[in-house]
Image 1 (cartoon, rainbow, N blue to C red):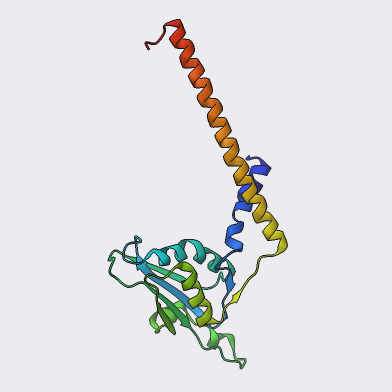
Image 2 (cartoon, rainbow, N blue to C red):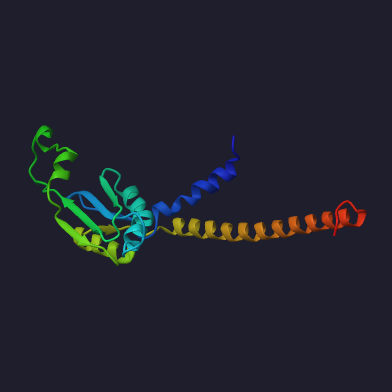
Length: 188
């Protein structure tokens, strides 16, 4: 079994999913989000790719029931779009059988908002999403900020330790090589 301290450290590193840009709660009217972009960053698809890698996990963490579709195509000149699908929520109470809808209905309908995100940075894409959906941004708590600071301090300390161990290892290897050279085991 892995040491409890190292497991805790690895779990703390997952804190980035809970806090940061993209940590928003979407309203219940948003039924689906679709993101379409090129596989590589060529042709102005860098922002969409960064949004997908960095902010979409936070968005999914805060909105687990929301279906998110990511379409990656091979054409660098192809579209780079963020599509937001919404549904109308009636305020009247009705039987559960009439209010349930399948995700197939959502995928066949037209998006309520379609944003061309080519050449946009990921932060601007997020601002478009928030403004179009009236999403609520989640601010990190003091405890989460402290944990983030501890994780960063640990990473800095780890890097310093890594450099120190590497230097020590290289020094030992050089000493061993010089000893072999002095004994005549290897040629100069």
